[in-house]
Amino acid sequence: MTPYFSIVMPTYNSAATLETVLDALRNQTIDQSELELLVIDGGSTDNTRVIAKRYGATVIENPQRLPEYAKSIGLQHASGKFIVRLDSDEELLYQDQLLKRKELLEANPDVQALLADRLVTPQHAGIATHYVNTLGDPFTYFCYRSKGSVRTTFAHNIIVGENGAVSSILRFKPDDIKPIGDGGSTTLSMDFIRQNFSDRLGDISFACSAFDAIVQLTQCCACIEGDNILHHSSASFHQYLKKLDFRIVNNLFHKEESGFSSREGSNPLLAKRKKLFVAYAGFILPVVFDAIRLAVVHKDPSFMLHVVYVYYIGLKTALYLIRSRLGHTASAHESYGQ
Image (cartoon, rainbow, N blue to C red):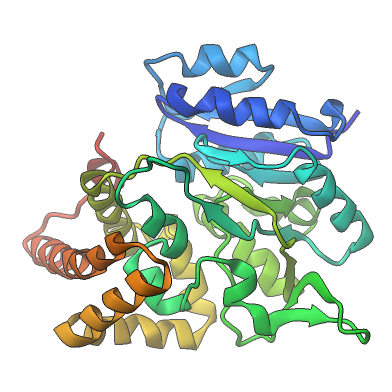
């Protein structure tokens, strides 16, 4: 029997959260025969593989360790009609979550991609976790005007019926800025990918931009109200700076591994906002004003660290560019901590 969903999960020393995440998957009301669990492991030295196998997952090697390569490996091995990209610290909150997704996708055959609405922050999380779950990073926040919820950020794209009922379908015009579908249990049609991108399954740049490629062709995606993910990220201040460093290096030197590059190339407004971010980061008052506003709106004083994050990005970008002029290009593995 062909599974309906292939769960593609990158892991690396993920034992602390993996059991919780896999338990939530195995407790879904959808028939378990319709689930394929693919754990793409980057050489874990803890109990990650033992836990994965205990839950019936297929463990596949990821020699490059980086999550971008895990996405590519997942595309090449998935046998389901749809893949669900779920990180090893992202927990499904409701037992019927996958069943509801299946029902929506079957009722709307033109929809080939689906996003979770928001990432929920657990209690006692790291100081940067709420900021990460809500905004991603300062650059993403600035370019996408993120409000922490797909349905809120893209409310003007949600289809409203004649009777005023708000649907789960978002439709876009070609020049619209579209949501980011890098992770957070993003669901993609493997049938659609096989039909339209069969020659790119092993292409790392496609693996990182598959959601963008699908939505660019279909001009639509789905997002079910209340379809949220509990993100068990520790995200301490230091860990978040390392993650920002990784994203800076990818955006500067490894654009094939950066989903933003594909989005920027197909949307002039994103390219314009990328340049405006440089100006934004060059002045203190707009950044401080944003930090205060974000802290008030989200009722969390840790959002005041927005100022630090913005100038960290600016400083590290400048340093990497200077180093590249001197002949040294940072690798993604280097910034990832390998």
